[in-house]
Length: 314
Image 1: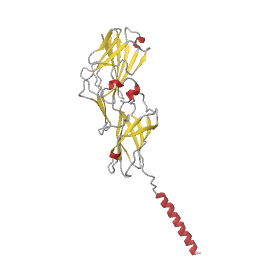
Image 2: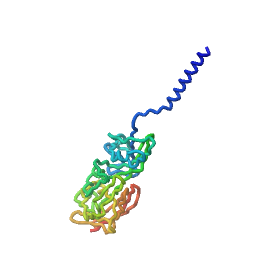
Image 3: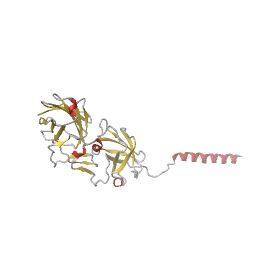
Image 4: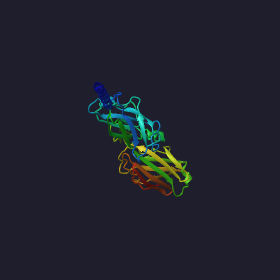
């Protein structure tokens, strides 16, 4: 009988040992993929709206991997939105994916929007003239560059959460009919020109820097009449939104002219002189009176937004 109890006790010990060991077993199901999510830095907005679109894609790069070759393996990997269309934050997935190589490694990532395939090694996206890309919101969105970097993750905590910021600068011109005009006259028959901007520049997807080409000359007269705008015949306004390379203007700032009924109205020198810094939005209201134009109020708020009113004279 004593031997029977001993046998039962030994069996119980073995079963107990197995139970405790099972709790410590780590099953390797294969490589662990980075899980990409992305949000937009409030209150910054994109060209079309304040949310991600249903077909948006970002480019993700491993910028630091101390103990593996992930830096050379994963550059400009396309991640396409999978959930969160028309929301401020979204999840992105990739057909190829980024997989951690070392379970003890902390990996650093960067990302940009919108994704572009076939980038050169320097990661530069360049345009000779973005003035032609302002005709509609969908086209403008392709130059509304977003960027984030220094985001870290590990194999045990693979979530990579980007918070994107705008790298271009935004200029909003609200042209308004004033004394001597009826509000409905704003709808047709006008021609508007804006001068003093450089439209050639680059966006570096490795550093997130967007900048105008300092060797290029400012365009003296850019016809913005048919650019992307909203017309409100009741309020007598035409609102133009432009996405531009950050740049330093000359001391005279931007020139603006409005032509209607054979008469041309222009702003005074220096009336429109925004800083045009990255991530900033500058808004000017330009009232066209038959006696002249008025530019009024430029304030700074986050996008960061600036607002000003301007007067133009014949």
